[in-house]
Length: 140
Ligand SMILES: [Cu+2]
Image 1 (cartoon, rainbow, N blue to C red):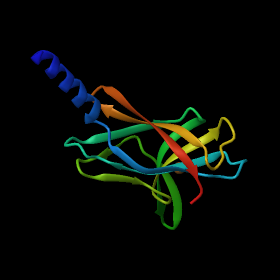
Image 2 (cartoon, rainbow, N blue to C red):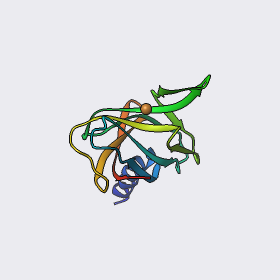
Image 3 (cartoon, protein in one colour):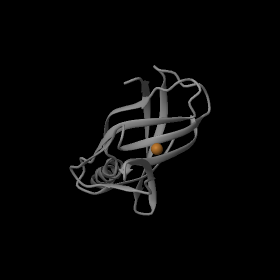
Image 4 (cartoon, rainbow, N blue to C red):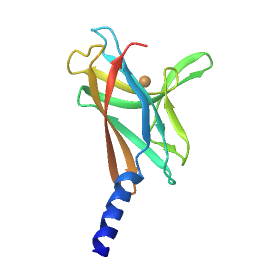
């Protein structure tokens, strides 16, 4: 009985350990012919370990990337992010003009009011941990 309790505790800890709390997440609605869209949200690390975001994937798009928009010498650029570490008790904010999840070549028509699945992928040692979220399509 004690062993079982311990085992359950371990499983729970593992399952909860490496995922941030994601709040206020949304996918920016775009004109029907748009080939590129962007998603935003706030990732909060409420654990006591660093969380490392390494990728994003959406089955609704041919390609997904994590970008950061910056301005260099007055020119706006988007820098691809291989990984972003979120320290304990820190937040990573995806918002227009900053970090964003770039979604390219939608596989079907995406309308305001839809909910689109985007998986956020984190590094956990040698393994990958997937966080599945349904982003509401909104116009802000
Ligand atoms: Cu981008």
